[in-house]
Length: 104
Image 1 (cartoon, rainbow, N blue to C red):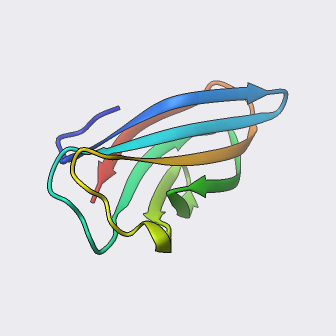
Image 2 (image 1 turned 90 degrees about the vertical axis):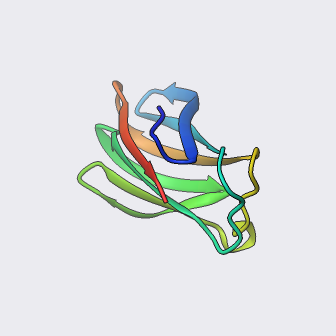
């Protein structure tokens, strides 16, 4: 997935098992270095429930498929040319669709 923002997002890894799985979302900064934090908004159809998040960011809001991911306190900086990884664990079944990624 990609948008016109200086940060692009993609799904790098999808692991599914029985009634759940994990998704790794990679955010790449192609613009200016950010020093005071970052967040991203995306639409995701998990056909189930968000169970956990970890990595460089966490899900601060999840409602009706709309997810907001914010930086962890120790990952406020986001240098140009680097990536951040956020994992989502879900309970539910495939298919999973991700669209409309907006990064602030």
